[in-house]
Amino acid sequence: MWKGNLNPSYCLRNYHENLLKSCFAFCLAAIFCSCDKEYESRPQTIENQFRGKYSIVSASADKEIDINLDGQRSKDVLKEIPELTLSYLELIVRNNSSEGVFSQFWQYQYFYGVEGKPVTYNSSIFVNFRNDATVAIFKVDSRKEFLTLSRSYTDLNYPLPISVEVIKGDMIKIIHRKEVFTPDGWTTVTFEVFYRRLSFDV
Image 1 (cartoon, rainbow, N blue to C red):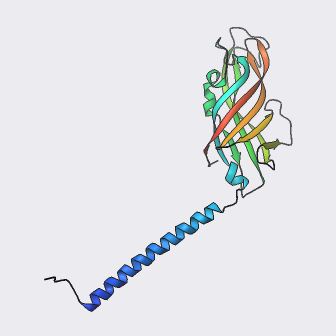
Image 2: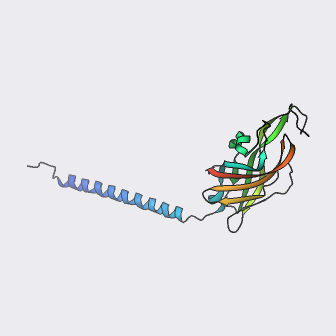
Image 3: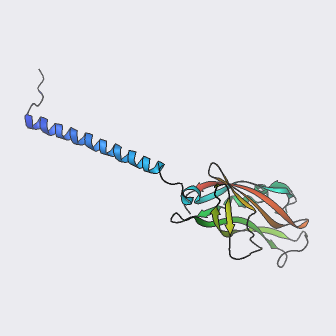
C-alpha cells in the first residue's frame, strides 16, 4: 500500500511550487522570444553593418614585383610582405552616425644602407617594413556597395584608395595605388586587397 504524504498543507505547498516553476519558465521563454524579435527588427545601421576590424585574406599586384629586394618577383603580395597579415582595416562608427573613420594599415618600405629614399638600386640597400595607416572619413553610397572616402588634406605618402567595395559575407575589397621601390627602381603598383571582418571591436 502507498504511504505517501497526503497532508493537505503539503500538497498545497507542492502545487504552489510547481506553479511558480511553470510561471518562471514561461516568463523566461517570453523574454528570450522578445529579445529575438527585437534583434531581428533592429535597423541595419552603418554601425551594425560595417563597424569592425578586418584582416587581409589576399593581396595581389597588377604586375610581378620584388618589393622585399630578395631577388624573387611575385604578384602575390603576401609572399613579398608576410608582415601584411598584421596590417588591419578598421572601420569605426559611433552612435549610429551616417559616417565613420576609415583606417587602413599597410606595410611601408624603409631602407638601410642609404640616406633617405634610394634613387637607384644597389646591393648595399636593405629594406624593412613599417606598419602605418591611411586615415579618412567614410560614407556609404545609397546602394551600400561602396565606401566613399574624404579628408581635408592631401598626403602623397598615404594616398586614398581608388575604390572601397562592399562584398557580401563581411568582406571588403580595396583597390589602391602606391609607389614602391624595386631592383628596377621606383614604380607605381596597383594593389587589389580583400579583407574579411575579424571582430566588431575597434
